[in-house]
Amino acid sequence: MINIAYPVIGKRERQLINEVLDSGMLASGKYVERFERSFAEYSGAKFGIATANGTTSLHAALLMCGVKPGDKVVTTPFSFIATANSILFCGAKPVFADIDPLTYNINPAELEKILKKEKNVKAVLIVHLYGLMCDMAAILKLRKKYNFKIIEDACQAHGAEFKGKKSGSLGDAAAFSFYATKNMMTGEGGITLTNDSKMDAYARQLINHGREGHSTHTVLGYNYRLTNIAAAIGIAQLEQLEDWTKKRISNAQKYNKAFEGLDFIKTPAVPKNHRHVFHQYTLRVKDSEREKFIKYLRDNGVGCGIYYDTAMYRQPLYKKLGYKAGLCPEAEKAAKEVVSIPVHPSLSKSDTDKVIKIIANYK
Ligand SMILES: *Cc1c(COP(=O)(O)O)cnc(C)c1O
Image 1 (cartoon, rainbow, N blue to C red):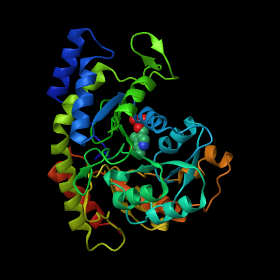
Image 2: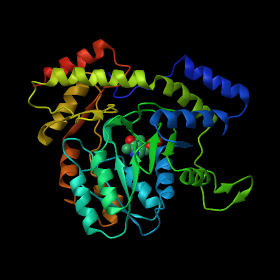
Image 3: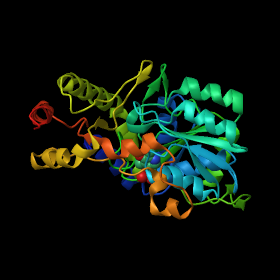
């Protein structure tokens, strides 16, 4: 079976983990600080605050932006559940704006409709889905007009670019995940980025029980810290991220070319000015065809995944909160039609050749 994801753990990871073990400092410490600096620098942001996972980095990012109980936060319905849940953690209300069916990201025109209608929208939580950044020009323009905070959920977009600017550098705060299947990983892990020194200081309190100085606790905080062991893996992974990303992009280009003439699938769009880092390579097939297509792929040894089979507000938890079917038709349609196939950097040439051959022979 060619797996949909395959975390790489090499010599360098082992070497740095051993350094941490030998140091005896397994919790917070200088590996965490080094990782924070190097990931922030790589992403073009001033400050990085490492966290236990992507979900906690999202929660911290929203709190840093001042999201409070009763506030409204606009987001996409087509993402991992952690995106919307992090809004609920703050006691705020998620308001869903439909996606652009070509990019799967929040549609700026739909976002503006909501901004016109809704009062006190505190923040917009955008998601750079599958490794493609949102239309940042349009979203930054809307921020000027309507005045809200932008939080980037960049959990799938390490190293992605819009007009040469990396994900995590353009909003007020950003959240990344280093879960085992992401473009780079630390097992579990995350980081919040910001360019604002006050937000950086507040975030450091939020992830460490509100601590200020040595033993004074001035705000309500949490234990959202990353460990030195995880950071050691992260340092090693970050050194390899660019090579891996190039491999993902070249695998995607090979697929695009091979699938050009196939009328039963649609390949992913890469709008101009974007560097898509292909966390997922996502095809679109007809709703009526998807189950059969997936079974065919799996029967022939090609792993695949559906991200995501439900618009988030159609989950039982959100139904109970009163969200109704039909709210975001494009997201609901995409949820029935997407299929992601392996694009990760550990694929060999014979793996990608096989994926292409199997798909070309469908039917
Ligand atoms: C992975 C992911 C998260 C959550 O990250 P964890 O590290 O699993 O908590 C949030 N949003 C998106 C879009 C993700 O892909």
